[in-house]
Length: 344
Image (tube, rainbow, N blue to C red; front, side, top):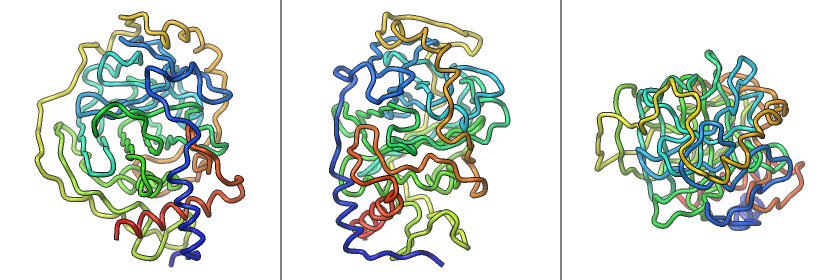
C-alpha cells in the first residue's frame, strides 16, 4: 500500500535536514529581504498597515497569530496564483503587518504541544483578499526552488518562551478555512511540519478542532507525523489514501467569546505606525501583483482530492538546501521516517 525506503540512509539525511539551517533571524534583526526574488519584506517594524508587504507571520497565542494571504484582491488572486507573493495577515496589532478585520474569523482553536503550535479554524477569508470559492493551497518555507511560498516568508513564535524563528512550518488557507502549524527546532520538526502533502488539505494534515462559533486555547499531546503509519509512509499518488490520524487529546482548554483587534471589515486602509516594512514596501504591491505563482495550481484546504502543486520542494527558507532538487522526495521521506522513529 505504501512505499518503503532504507531506514539507515534516510535517517542520516533526515538528521542533517532537521538540524542544518543557513540562517536564524529575529524580527528585530531580519534583513529587508531574506530570499532572492522576494516581493515583500522581513523588516516590518511595529503597528499595522493594510498595505503592508510584510512577510513575517506569528503563531503566539489564540489572539495573536497570522496566516499568509494575497496582497491584492481580485478573481485572479487565488492561492495557486499568488503563493509566491503572499503577505502576512494577523489578528494582533504591533507586528507591522496587515490586520485580519474583526468578524472575519468565526471560529479559531489554538493548540500547543511539546513540539509545535497550531491554529485551526474557519471564517470569511475573502476579507483578506482570497477570492470567494477558492479552495486554497499550501504555503511552507521550502517551495519548489527552496525559497519558500511565499518567497522569503518567515515565521516566529513566543509560545515556547522568547520569540524565536520557527524554521519548519506549514500553512493551508482557503476562502473559508485555515490551518497553520509551526514546529520547534529539532529532529522531529521536518516530519511534524511535513510539506509534501499539499493536496490533502487541513483536516488530513492538521487534525484538530475546526468548529465555527467558538474560540479556545488548549494544551495537547504531540500528534502523529502526517503520512506516517507505523513503518509505512504514504505519498501522494499512491493507489490508496489512508485516513487522517486522529487529533491528539487536548487538556486545560480555555475558551473565549471572540478574538479581535478593533479593525472593522470596512476599513480598506489603516496605517497606525511608521513600521519599516509597511512604509518602505507599500508601493511594492503594484509590482508584486504581476508576479507569477511557483506552480499556478491550487490545492484544497479541506479535501484529499486535487492536482498536486509545486509547493512541496526540498529547500528551506532560512534552512540550508542539502541536496539537489532531484533528491527532494528522498529527503522529505527521510524527515518522516526519523520523526516517526523518534516519536515511537
